[in-house]
Length: 289
Image (spheres, rainbow, N blue to C red):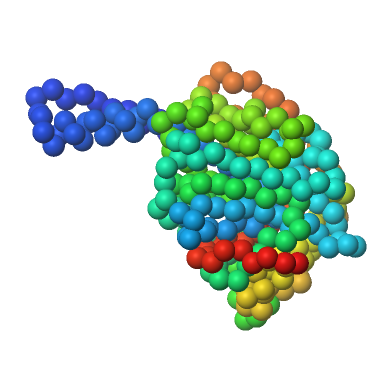
């Protein structure tokens, strides 16, 4: 799914000075590790410029009468307990970066800016240091902005990548002691991963899943980013295939694509087809409901 190459450093004896310095940097780079945070499904991501470009990720709780959502942590086969608000915090130890992260251009259609935002009642909130990169994986779904009928392509996830010298120093804190805040089983040597997945509680048909994703994205704008709602709400239209096959939770073999690693069952079952918005701000979140 999301792989990286290991850099190699070569020693060169005859040259000193600037060349030796360059070799030192290359050698340091070759020993780095990667921490990845995967946000799958309807999770908004805010870059807080006023707080060292740290991130706050959250997923508003659906309003009464709408499809309820479940949280799956690290590919668990069962969702987290309903009715709770879960809070996570990734420690900044070893992640001393305050520069603006590099953002994959494929996220541009849903990368916004506002000074008016709030978190409100959320199923999950995640505090994160500034990453080196924000990217995504998989396909992007075609959608239409209601305001000007502009076509765009929305990813289903955000992936945050941190380059560190010692990934074991990076800790994830959980508000619920029942959750084991360890790295995902879908980690491998040199890459330490954490997965957060949000999606509808019940199985939906393909059309219903797409319609729900559009509706909930608009709800996130209305609830948390009111200044963005008019211009960036999505048109309530179905743009995919018309097949009626049900989408049901299932265990699928997760291929690690790393030498000598066996297949393990993992529950990549999230049917919420879109991610949330990626938003820049230099203002603190507003209080109130």
